[in-house]
Length: 441
Image (cartoon, one colour):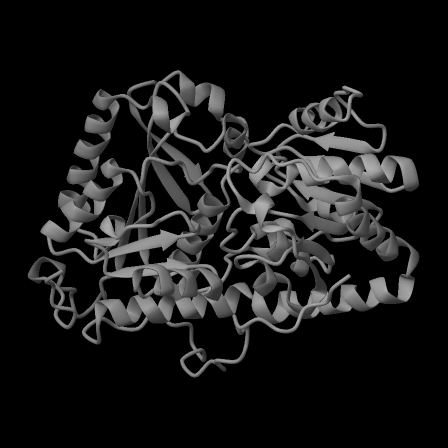
């Protein structure tokens, strides 16, 4: 894209008395208050960090969510918002203001041509009136390409947030100047697959929102029981634990997935159909995970698809909770030596992720879980490693410095740096994204 990084456009000239803030426009129809979307939560925190560093941040979105349960992030405002269908509303979110087009459905696939046209008209107005220095977005549908192309047509640099391994062609990044991701694994994947340069900036998690003040760790925790997240493996494990260690309680937090679906699928295949298991507690989607992490002894994340990072794993590390996860994608990066990695047969990593594990395949996983209940010394050692990984790899301050650096480089030296005081020479080794040797069962 042709734009001069070194000279701000004439209309952006700042007065000598009051330096003009750098301005970023987040533009995407998905709502950033969606608690069922890890990407939305990450971007929201990035915007808060930029705002704290002196950027002006504008948000244009719509009432579109990964799952209807994600509306929990609106904390009681959802019912009132629904009364304004077809209108643009402002939703206050601390220091952020989300300008949302209220669509007829929370489902992206149900968004009408009329709604898309209305949203794009609002986007064009925002570009004209707010004159952003950067447009930031995500999304791989053809409609999303227009976000980047319209900004590029106006000479505005475009930044894309990439948090999955789904893209196999390059059209999505044709008009993009900078691609950010949360893990070195995803950056390497796209460099190898498409020859695309992607910059890893780490996970963006505010510890104040996820770290429990006091912990009484007693449960095995699994979040988002979808097939691609390994729900059938967890259902099989729960059946094994019900038989061999019924005292170990599995807590399942529903996000986009429904636990009873996994239980029915697995038990029906075994000839004993059931909807529930005695050793499982199901918790609804929530915007406050602290009570859940307070009672979690181990986090289980046997994802079968490409996880760019696995937000729950970073949150677990910040809480000092050891994790058992798949040796795939960015998950090993997130847990370092505080994680126990699962190497599953390749057939389980194939869509639609509905292959059913046999008892002899899940038994080693069961023994691994039991060991973390029986071996106190080993468990406490993993707890200390988890705290260390959380501090070194998932520091919000260190990752914010990475983000500010790449954005400053994108805009060029004519713009004053927004780096926090004293961080210009931050140690590159702090919060390193390079993986270390993990533990294994």
